[in-house]
Length: 353
Image (cartoon, rainbow, N blue to C red; front, side, top):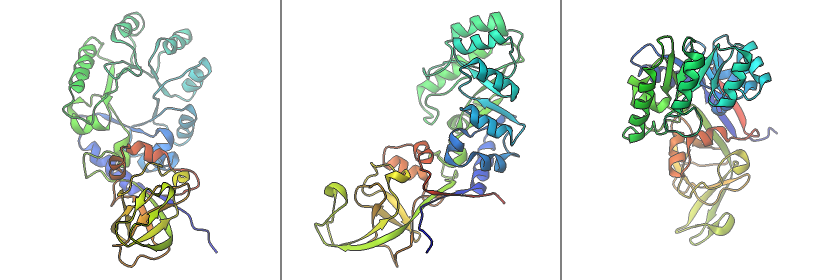
């Protein structure tokens, strides 16, 4: 007997379709950096590199071990987006021909001590208040060390998904004002997915696209979810009005119901706080979560699902049930869901054709 399993199916064709759609938004010759940190947002870093090598001009990661892996697969630009934190890391990054972000004085000190100024991206804080030099501090570094060096000036938007957020215009202005003080051989980068979609005129020399590639950008329905998280039904039970379902008896039947138990729980990466009424898909019909998620199982109201039987797949998100639906309805973000799926869920990558 073959053991049953939950599955995470990743569709490389959808990934490519999303990238092509997003690139069409660019109004200049911006280069496209595919952000594939955290195992390509849970999509499998090696497979994503293989499926995007003709679409991406470079790749962005955070951990140097991921950069090593990509370098064995590609000779394109690889950016360590949080830079390096030791001299050994710096030397390895140079040996691998990596680009590195420099976002504080300690990192720049390592650069100075090695007197190597190649492949640098200098990150400026324009309002995110997370990483990056304050502008006055950066200008001191620029005037002393960088005024004749080629590098990339970058910043990160705090609210790019919100087109009318005042902070966007404030950050754009700060970045533009600073850019005008740079010599002409400085590249510039500000745009993430939200910026590309809402402010394509701000794409400059490089765009850094992450969540949109994978279908987690929820403000454009043409961007499709590249992942399908599904698991089989392992039990179906009839319950009566006023019966309670699951831990703490949170879900109480208002009528006689049919409840399916699905082989997926929080130990697989489904958040514990998924609410009753959250949509799932069974037999191309929408059903709803009914009862608290447990470690290995989730209960679903299938009262109105036609021909529902043991072994039918229950999809929690997919091309037809966008990941943004479960994220928004449960006060989550799609990043969290994508990167949170555990190793005991079988991962299947379908290469683009």
